View 1 (cartoon, rainbow, N blue to C red):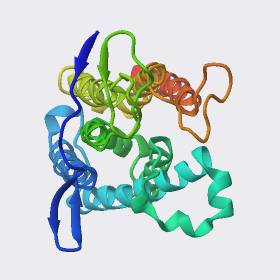
View 2: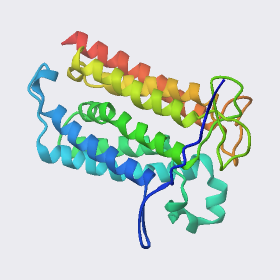
View 3: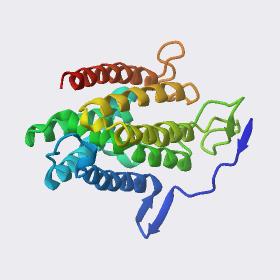
View 4: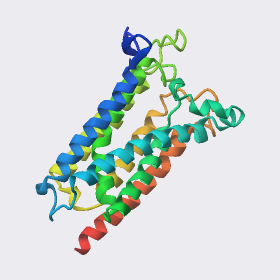
Length: 271
């Protein structure tokens, strides 16, 4: 087993009196800015489509703006509902204490889906044409978020007897899997590479829904696998046998991903 040293990096990147800029917050900001710039670039690249794209600048701006709102609200509500509902029902005021942590990727995904649906209806554009653009840029934000989780020493892995081991100050003296880094590598770097290969080499943006389905499929598989090395949430533990909440929420992603890919492929064959 390879032993890694926990980085002596403060979770606070910059402190200006009472104002603190944390790495986790910066990850969100950089992820949003990247998505905005990248989606704009992709939407204007006619070479990626087999037809003229109909995305104007305002549509992209609104798509990213509403997606950011949907992500934040959805991630918070998702954590409350999926991971700690009993606590927040007894202490509803704590719902507002977002600085204490508590965000769910799957909840954020639902929030983005709702925001994308709203934008597609507002601009009379097909839902999957917009969701494909969101999905192809999202892994960068996921990568940065997981790296920030590692720096914060949160969402750490189970005790490790193989691969890599890190002693997290916020846990105990056991060597544990740096599951945040596994997720950053798979759900961030690898997913970004695969999706971008699909759009630049196989022109999948011309098949609305294909990129979205591929994102759901691969993220669901990656997250399910990494959950075997990730410490379950203390308040939940294992839901059933070896299953964690993260595994349970990822299984529908795999199923819907396969269904969407099949539908997108059939629609492409009909053209």
